[in-house]
Length: 442
Ligand SMILES: Cc1cc2nc3c(=O)[nH]c(=O)nc-3n(C[C@H](O)[C@H](O)[C@H](O)COP(=O)(O)OP(=O)(O)OC[C@H]3O[C@@H](n4cnc5c(N)ncnc54)[C@H](O)[C@@H]3O)c2cc1C
Image (cartoon, rainbow, N blue to C red):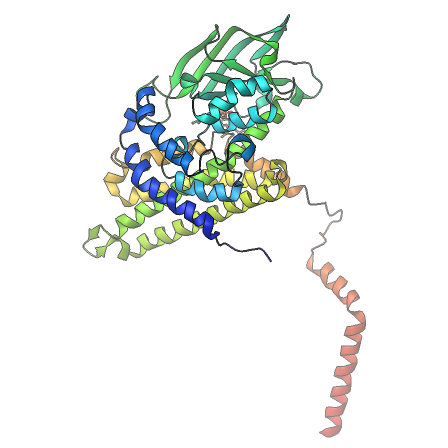
C-alpha cells in the first residue's frame, strides 16, 4: 500500500542541495535589494546563479522534459517550492517565477510553432519576460464582466480597453491579453479569446505601475495598461477563438497550486523566525519560549502550517495521479482558500512576538502580512473559491425528500431493527431461556 510520507533518497539529495544553495547564495543575494533587479544587475548576479541551477538539472522544474524541464511532477515540485517560497528572488533563479511560468505553460499548450519560437523558448530560457493581462479596473473577480474588445478588421484584430494589475507589464516583451471577441455568442464562456500582444505594439500604454503595500506611488510592478486601437495580425490569437475561459483556467489552476506550495515555505519561514525569537528574548519571567501564551501561539502555528502543508502536498499528489487540474478543482480551491488565512495568521503572530521590531521595516513580517492579503485576492478572491469548493463538495449529495431526513435517529433505529430482526428474536429467546434456567436453579 503506497501511503507514506518519505522522500526518496535520490530526490532528498536534490532538496539538500537546494537548501544549501538557498542559504549560501540566494538569501544573501536578496539582501542587495534593487541592485539585482535591473537588467545589468540580473546579468551580473542572477544569470550566474541560474547557470548553477541549470547545471544541477533543477531549472524550470514545473515543466515536462519535452519543454526542457525535469518532469518531476507536482509532488516533488511541492517539496522544492517549500524551500524556494521563503525568498521572493528564488523562483526567478530557478526558472519558475510567476507570471512567466503560467504564460509559458499556455503557450506550450496552445501556441503555434511560430508563437513558440517567438515567445516560449526565450521565456523558458529566462531571456524575456511576460505579463498576463486579464483583470480590468472595473472588476477582476468575474471574467464575464470584462469589456476589453478585439474586433476583426480584415486580417487584423483591433484592440481597445483597459487592464489592471498586469504584473510585470513594464518589464514584459509580450502581453498575454484576454479580450472579448464574440459578445453575441450564446455560451457566455465562449465570448472571449486570448492574444499574444508584443508590449511595444503602437497603442499599448502603461498608464501607471501600481505598487503593492507601501512604497513610492507609481513605481510598482502591477501595470495599469491601456490598449487604444492596438492592431495585431489574426494569428496573434492564442488557441481557438472563443477559448479564453478554458485557457485561463488551465493557466490559473497550475498557478494557484504553485503559489500555495511557495506559501508553505513562507509560512514555515515565519514560524522559524518566531521560534528563534521565542528562545532568545528574555523577560522578567524567563525566555518568551517559557511563557504558556507564547507556547500556545507556537503550537497553534505549527499545527496550522503542517495542516496546510499536508493539504498542499496531497493536492500535488492528486494532480500527478489524475494529470488533470479539473479533477482536482475541489482540492485546488481548498488550498487557495486556506493559503491567505494560514499565512496571515502565522505572519501576524511572528510579527507580534517580535514587538516593535516585528512591525518595523527592518523585518520581513509586514511584507509577509501584505503578501498574505494578496494571496486572498490574486487569482480570484477567497469568496469565489469557497463557492467553487462548496459546489464541488455538494455535487455528490442528493436531497432527502421527506419531512425527517434519512439520518433521523428514530428512522435509523427502525431500519436497524428490521435488518437484524432475526438476530434480535434469537437474542430475546436466548435471554428468556437463560432467565428460565436461573429461576429453576434458584
Ligand atoms: C499582487 C497582485 C497581482 C495580480 N496579478 C495579476 C495579473 O498578473 N494579471 C491579471 O489579469 N490580474 C492580476 N491580479 C488581479 C486579480 O486577479 C484581481 O485583483 C482579482 O481577480 C480580484 O479582482 P478585483 O481586484 O477587481 O476585485 P473585485 O472583483 O472588485 O472584488 C473585490 C472584493 O469583492 C468581493 N467579491 C467579489 N466577487 C465576489 C463574489 N462572487 N462573491 C463574494 N464576494 C465577492 C471579494 O471580497 C473581493 O475581494 C493581481 C492582483 C494582485 C493583488
